[in-house]
Length: 87
Ligand SMILES: [Zn+2]
Image (spheres, helix red, strand yellow):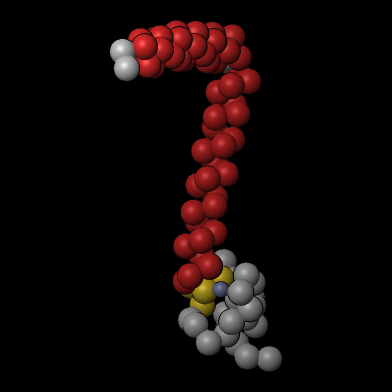
């Protein structure tokens, strides 16, 4: 068994022992990936937490946006229609 890192013989994620150990039993590549996914996960948790504590606010916000979107689609449809009759 090689001494890749203090606790691991190879990278926990990709299994390499050719790249240098970076942190947490991961090579540099995998550590950066891990860090990225940690952040993604944290963002998700934050958003979920925000949603759980502000359900009504979030719902109202999306409802508002939906109304706006529908209005926009209607306007756009009318414009297309008028353009079509001009031919
Ligand atoms: Zn790795």
